[in-house]
Length: 252
Image 1 (tube, rainbow, N blue to C red):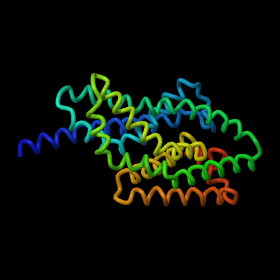
Image 2: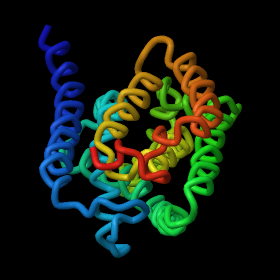
Image 3: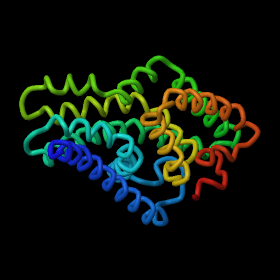
Image 4: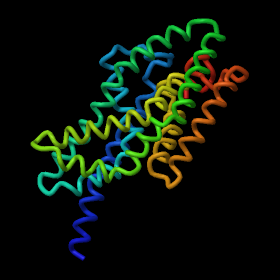
């Protein structure tokens, strides 16, 4: 019984801390949303500020789905668990923070596209929806999602990492698979609006369902099909992509 309690504590503690961190990021985003510039693209932010907001968005959206993996990894740690889990989480977020660099370049370019005639913005939105839809159905998406859904094999790999860099390497490795799994879903924010809170909530639900729900692979495929449908529907309903067509949802 005592051993079981220790195991539960090892599992629940790290998962709870990641959920608390995600909740804190959500609180910051919701409370600061009113002061963010309501414009497409980079929202008028310089690169350092954009990367800071981007990383907070990632923490809010990705950490809930990552908590079970972090809890499983924590069970492999016997000493100095708290600082080592911090290192794991920081390395995970740094992978996504680095992805903020191409995200900034994309947002900057799409911000300029938003100034073009509405038909151009609609065409770009259709391309974004189609890109995500196709990627959701690819073997690479399946492979990355499988690693995120069944991380036991990765735990064995992480256990072979030598030296004090083990936690950083493990966090970065898991972050890389997570990025490979979810990058196209994040690109959708360019169409919906980078700071569209409703879009962030929906995408967080999608990401969490893909990774944790029993039918997660089916969820990924359904999302891909829906995204392809949106690529067609946006020509008739441009408001589906408010971040590029100026629809009413962009200010939400």
